[in-house]
Image (cartoon, rainbow, N blue to C red; front, side):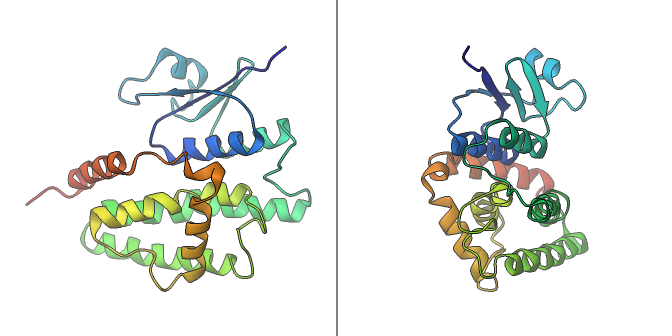
Length: 220
């Protein structure tokens, strides 16, 4: 019996994209269902009634929500091309950095994008500090997970796309000369065959984030 795999996501979500990458790394065929979050489908509300958010992976009719949970489910279900190491200590470190991204780095960058005045300065300072930790973690490595991409690379993958879009919209230089290892990783990651054809259209992304920026920073 053929397995049925569906992925509910949006065209632009970094959280959905990390799941797309994991499925592609594993070579798992799936049906992509792009949601309109301003008019959530009955399917999304059925499969994720608690959070009503994407992404949701549906495997043989069983829904799994929350992108980090989905990534681990994918790795445990399909053993080929593992994205988490076998060693418990190394697995714990990968989970730590994944949480660091979602709980510290991403919120600080978003704050720098959306806030104004002193709040923006504080968010930018937090972003710079968080990026220093990321830069340090890359020392002596090609990818965060070693010689090939793994969980942490997939989670940090949004940096290779959204940072340049944020910079284009705001005019700020977020990842500059102070982060050479991160800059090199962003270039290397974005050009991987499994990654490079999955990026959302850049022109659409700039239009989207310009509108968001204008919403948070209305003309006075």
